[in-house]
Image (cartoon, rainbow, N blue to C red; front, side):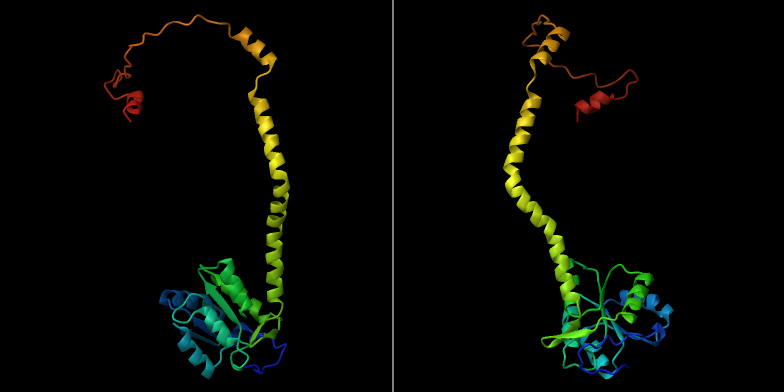
Length: 250
């Protein structure tokens, strides 16, 4: 087990290890999900693989025997994955504060992902997951050189907050530019569209003359005012309902 001292610049506890050296803890309330994760991780032959259904039991076990890597579900009760991260990253919890945590969740919204990463998670896995996904995340943690840095009473992964802030501003920029542009261009653009539509709908003198040549005036035959409207025959020559009778009676 690496030396767990509260020093700034400490890398995660699994950095530089091989998968066969890992002591992995999985926290998930679903027995089905535990079985699935077991089948995906065991082929990597970790040194130890432990499962817990809730955060309280997991914390008690980890305080006695600290693991080197944790996979945790995000949505749990009564204690959530978010609460687990806050406890583990507390600067006073020497035995757990540098252990890497990979969050596994079926609710990988931007808000949840950002909250997990800002709270000190090493990575996030979105359900449904595959054995390839687990292997990629584990390999990432084993080679992750980012140190932990203190922020208030907690440790967080260096550079994560700045990177998330930068991405958020980058995503907001097109919307901001569009809103500024539309604010000045929308009235003018609306007038241009209205004028173009009116021009398209108004026939030219040449069009009118062409219509007069191609469609000369025809005498209008009077239509009896009391002529009854008869539906088409309901059956064809074969005695079967015709298509038009079906449409008529719909």
